[in-house]
Image (cartoon, rainbow, N blue to C red; front, side):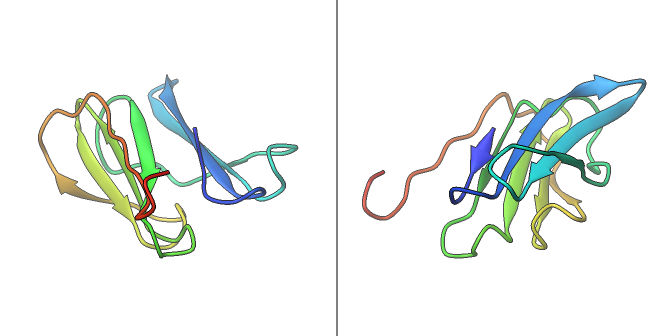
Length: 95
C-alpha cells in the first residue's frame, strides 16, 4: 500500500481469477477503484510513487517484472522483465 498524500493512494495485490488487482483511492481509503490491468504477469509484490510527480508516476514490481505508470495508475507498461520481490523509496529529506 502506498499513499502519496492524505487522500490518494494505491494498494497492490495478488491475482484474482487470473487478473492482478491494483486498487486506488482518492478519499483516504473510504472507497477504492480497480485500476487497469498491470502489463506484467503474476502478482505485484510492491509499489512506490516517484517523488515530485504528485503521485502521477508509480512503479509496481513483482516476480514478472516492473511496470511503470505515468498517469496515476490509469495505464501501465513494463519497463523491466526481471524478477522483483520488493521495492522501497525515501524522499530527499530522508522520510
